[in-house]
Image 1 (cartoon, rainbow, N blue to C red):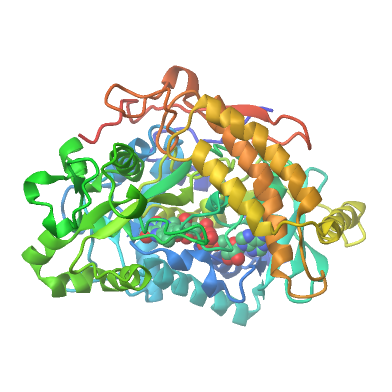
Image 2 (tube, rainbow, N blue to C red):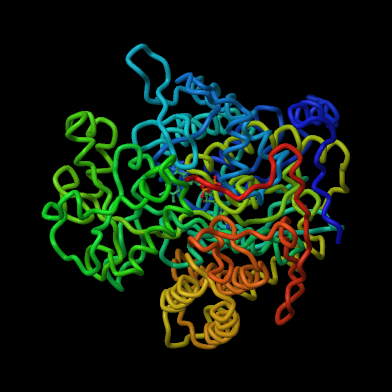
Length: 637
Ligand SMILES: Cc1cc2nc3c(=O)[nH]c(=O)nc-3n(C[C@H](O)[C@H](O)[C@H](O)COP(=O)(O)OP(=O)(O)OC[C@H]3O[C@@H](n4cnc5c(N)ncnc54)[C@H](O)[C@@H]3O)c2cc1C
């Protein structure tokens, strides 16, 4: 299979404009004849569904929560990037483009990233028009703060609740369309398969999560905005419900899966506190604007932080990366935290923690100012740890946070299955091997509000397919397969809980394919995961029935998918014999412990094809060309 990314020709600044002009349009009067199925109503799916309906398409939108307002996007804390240059500190579309390509360690597609930077400025206007209450300066201008991997302030925010406020904006736009009749919303409905007819995505099979009824929805195109798969690691900062089922089932129906091993481990999370824990909590990167990261210089120093004198503290990010300091990008800050903990200088129980200290900022700005900036984050920290971060430094440690991998898409956001579009965190995204903070919201909204509504028309205008009905054999076949799988899970009646399998898989992935990876460990994981999967299908216990609300059954389906995806994550990590961004292979590092890329061999997107159970997946490559940003060793020193 040859991957055609459909990158438009011409100078990078003109590609998107030119492309939009060249895309076919659907006559406004004809749009209502097309039905688009949008799975997901987070920032990506919600904004897409609202925008497509606004254009006149007939939209059906699905989510597994009881309301679109509960999508995982609501958890986003710190902010959203845009190259507005309001602070007049040297930002530009080019700089955001450059920072993102460099931040992703030169493993992203230039044309997509440039378009993202261009669109970033429109997103803010759109959201302000919707009434999103971004923080403002005294004079009324929107305020900005800094995030990692950038030396300018370009992050727009609404205290520590940016995702929630943006989601309310998208939700209102969506509800307006629901009221108008353009969008039909299907909450508490889980997509369990993709229906492909004549080589095109034509529908989905869903399960009503309240009644258990399995049914199909058919349409002219399918859009997946179903979020990331960080929960494959069991412990992550993602919402507990976030899962890979929609994209994984689409993968098994022909959509290639790109760069599955690129996982973002976020440096500032509350450390794991015990085996019973099922979720980790992020402390927003915005805190690194004012917080200073340090550990004691001496190994095994167990003195309380207040008793460690200044001269005996190692502000290791400021020491190692003087020009970016505490705002070094996430992959680099996470590895640096691991390094000091591995040296025995970590703090807190088990030594798996570093301090994030606000004492200097409080002295300089006063406690009120810090409360104004980060009050809700401080409160959250105190509630979880029972420690007062105004008095004691926070203790933080890296945790799985975001997945840069996802379904492969071309410039039009179309997967390798014609008619299947993938947006937001669910696609392999514009972030390369490492996403910069505050860029996920930007990408999800760029995809949903601005890109997809243009590109999907080109597909629809050129592809009016025959109408298909529920009696079509491929529809009946997909439904029967879903029914069989549900029945099979319930019939096993084994001895282990779904969670126990998930936890074991997650620990294996974290140990062998987490912050640091080695060939031997990856090979071991690739051997052990199939055995765990085999045991799952023999020994899992799923109580209850399929005709009711059954969370164990929902989880079982998702964990079964994670057990397959987890293996692909390790295979991808094993094949990529280099270190780049969040993918750190210990064998490939510089003398001072930084990632060593191999551009000769690996400057490509790795896109994997499913070839059936028990078969090895097939690797396809999309070469990456760097014509505007020179390939260079990434340095934040
Ligand atoms: C704690 C935290 C803080 C963050 N803070 C920031 C930040 O400050 N700035 C930033 O840029 N990024 C941040 N991120 C990342 C960002 O929040 C996410 O990448 C982004 O919100 C993902 O949006 P999405 O629309 O792609 O997916 P989600 O918001 O995850 O939405 C997925 C949707 O798909 C639906 N769905 C999934 N599977 C199915 C299925 N099988 N059937 C039916 N429906 C399905 C869900 O119901 C949901 O509606 C943060 C992430 C975390 C974890």
